[in-house]
Length: 635
Image (cartoon, rainbow, N blue to C red; front, side, top):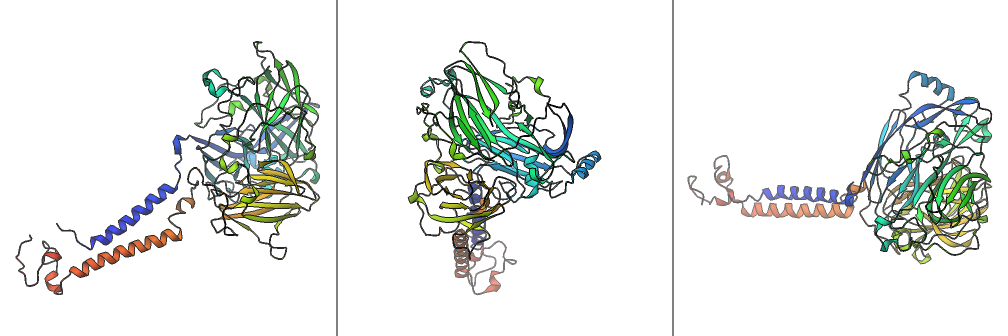
């Protein structure tokens, strides 16, 4: 049968639908992109009571606090670029049994205090929608939210962490309740062995004969509770009779008995340090004879391993990864605030390996990206009994006092080839946008780029721009400023160039001082925040990343990501909802409609009685001739 022209119209609509659908699927990254794995975990948030014993008075105390899955030791999440992290966050604080309601009343907890969400600190991932790293998401008691975080291929490999992040007093209470955990993006030391002599040449050898560099995680947090109610509290230390219990990987550790770690002569070991406290700085110092070199900061590996260094500072939210080794057997220490925190026993090769004490590592809780449990935990269960220890108050230490030893020889490891393009040097000539920010006090940070008479409530920044911000701190307090989604490249302090610019997601700004940072705005649109990571300084600046023209009309050094931007909500519709696509699609449909209509009217006959299809269902319109017989057969 000959094709009827009117069907061309319906064909055009079908083609339009197919084009739209195929474009949506193309712009939305697959969860198993490039054969990646999926890590699926559930965090059930609820109120629980935990018992502690004071190591001096032997007095027992029961503390009421929120916790994930009824535990204080939260799992370490391990992924690689290309993986997807799925987290089901269930706020079960209204589903506890009646005995817990007595605790809620005793603790004066409210729904607002128990409202929550999750933040994946330091990750370069989408902030959009209910499934992204969205700081404005609200998960109230009784509600559940499913996060789906895709780790881009251009993501740095390193140490990150997660914590609940609902703003205000809820955030203070969360970090006082140890709602934190380590998050590792693996792969930065692939191909390197744990022996100093073979690290440089390991890629030329079979990996079957090279042991990987082993690691330990040290995540510091604090339970802060009100002595009157024995409940974790959002109050600061100066707001009442408040006490603290220092935790290491969710376990109470003694300041009088150091943790013990074994090492062999010539062996390299990686130590990952995370300051997950709501406020307070950590000062670490290694003893002489133990070579200690910094590998990375805030999850971004250095292009060359740092010189032997003895003093390290971690401001709230920061991470430092260190490599330790020595060629002499003996006992060495890492001090934390002048207290022997970690004892490192170094033995000759071939000696029987000493069974170390429990250093608070959560290896037995670490999941790989297929959700399997590690089975290599050798920790002694005799230390499962948690003890309360003396309160530990953290104070500021000048970051400029960090010193390096005279040993300037570096480990023979270069990492420049492994740095993703977004985390390479940002030159001044690449900058497209300059802004000025002013920290007025602990509650206020302002965008004063256009002057104090024109201060925006939100700061809009253009996707694919390269920003340079100078941030002045007029306050008398020091402020560790944290930027979501994008790392900052520190180039100046106090108006002076830093010796070695590096990437950080959290940077301390001293009082009456300033910093200058640059950052690439890549891959993701949506609202993010810059805020002080001392949770008792509630300043916050909202940044609206939008796909708008860059303010000077030029784009220098714009980087194309290695795969389409991640999106679960509106990003997967960015292309099909763009004005250019809608205009083009509408024009395409109109053209098809015009063609089909022309086809129809050019071939129709003026005698409408002879074209009635109810009388001639076996004939088509183009086959009927004027004056023809109704009984004429079709050719």
